[in-house]
Length: 213
Image 1 (cartoon, one colour):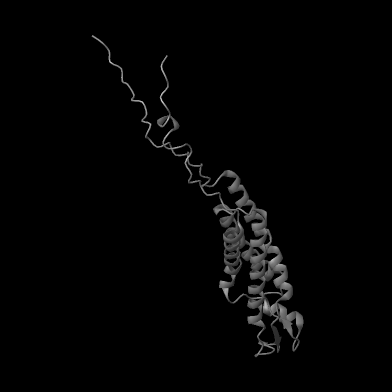
Image 2 (image 1 turned 90 degrees about the vertical axis):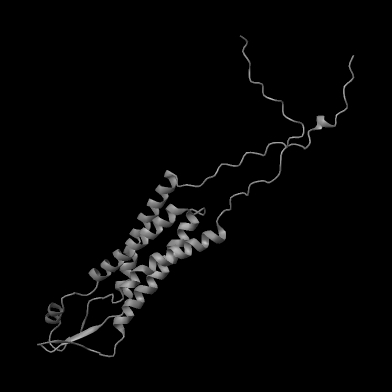
């Protein structure tokens, strides 16, 4: 009993040449990207110390005065309480822009890990700046502060952040600016070539028949 072998037909001369292989995609998050994102989160989070220092230094002060029995606002028309929120807002906005520009200049290609690290670090930095500013500011105990100041002597009230939403200014500004910079000036991936390699039809189709000896 004979054994038949599968015979592959020869390629037709009229078949189109194969297309070039598609370039490998670089999509995905590599361990190096995760390390970069963690480094960004750490550095930006530590920068919250600068926010706290500047807020405690630049925020306008609300002053109280005591008559020995109660504590009153020295100037009831003062806008210093709102000014403290505005100072925190402007400082967080400026630091958000600076952190976004710094991350972009460090890694122009961008990436999901960098954006997440920037957002997480900025949120942590806002919390650090808020709590540090409260700690560095005047005493939070009004009764103790009034007793130290004395009757009829004005003293500074503790810092307060009335608008808690300002804690989101830094992360929102940082992410928005970084995405804008990445969209405008990040390196572009080369577009795949649409040209075919080879000729169609193959040269031997129109070749002259060889003479037999």
